[in-house]
Image 1: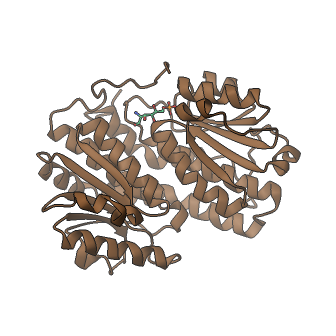
Image 2: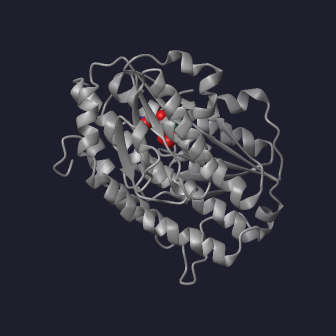
Length: 369
Ligand code: M6R
């Protein structure tokens, strides 16, 4: 059932191109508009929404963090993202005009379930993004958009994460479509870009041998840091989470702009630091800033592992290891930039002799608070 792979995680990483295209399937009509018929929240209600609140845990929370950038950019609706376990206990401000999006692979995560129950009690509408048909979270929500990743067995979430991102982008575009903040042509452009991502992920997967080699060479390290900006910041958090749960290493993700506010004190000779670099096209300010961050940490001895777009020549002189990913629009970059980090963590776990599919102390779905 592992389809010839040593671990479910490897199989699930390899299934990502299909998971991404399956999640888009049937949701775009011939003219490039979105047909999210499953979102049974009436368009009239969606037009009235004045705040989006995303609740989730772990990897699903990281998908939510990325969704915020897309939702606010495309719809101009304020969006908050909160850990489900924190949300309920701080008396959040919610009403009929709040759209709560609960993201969960399993659909059984107790913290997320309790958060959505609380939201509905306050009159908010809840849309679930879920991978498991008929599970509790979608059953208790007003509507559900299923991710079509297929069953995810490995405890470490991979393909579910990518499909959560796709679903979040679809929700953001749909909100833009319903509310008229995004017009047909723009939606079609993004949909076209999204449709190309499946192939791009496939291409990333074909170039992972150097990443595996690098991971093996770092198996004796104690700490790895991850830096990113903009949507690359949650990608850094996700890379660090994967490494913690699989390799049992100290791993932390930072917003690159925060370096000088503290974390740069951690940099020492030969410390591996993974940096997720945004596209040099588009928002080039972001790119330039991160290049100077890379220079700063390298000057202090860090071993820089740089994830950058193909053709991004500016980063090359400062990268001790360069991992190339296909060019994508900035907002979609997490779909390709996360993949090397999954492979990296999986290979490090293997090199350290850890159980890849069943890391110690963890359960696939956390059904207690
Ligand atoms: O099933 P869920 O998406 O609700 O699970 C949420 C987290 O428990 C989950 O993403 C966890 O962080 C994974 N082990 C991450 O790889």
